[in-house]
Length: 67
Image 1: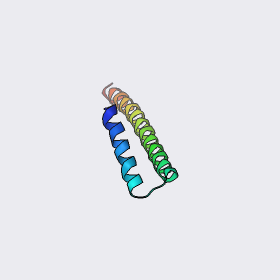
Image 2 (image 1 turned 180 degrees about the vertical axis):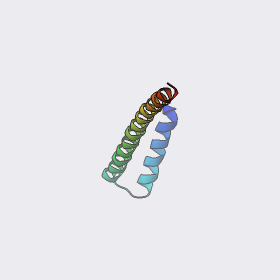
Image 3 (image 1 turned 90 degrees about the vertical axis):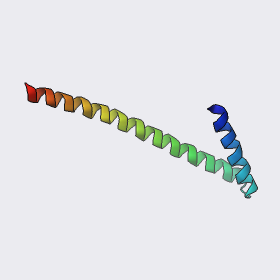
Image 4 (image 1 turned 135 degrees about the horizontal axis):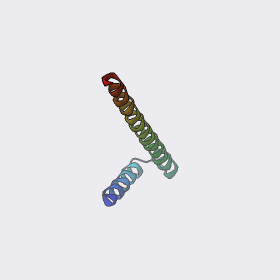
């Protein structure tokens, strides 16, 4: 998995260099992509935790309705 990711990054770096992007621009692109991936990861984990809490609340409500 790591090898595929590293190969993809190197390929992207080569393509961006070939298109005429400078090193700083390429670095900014990678930093922006990393920030976006981190934000998506955080939001996904946050939503998963909220979903688990909601499931627990629904189970409690159903249990209370049966009693």
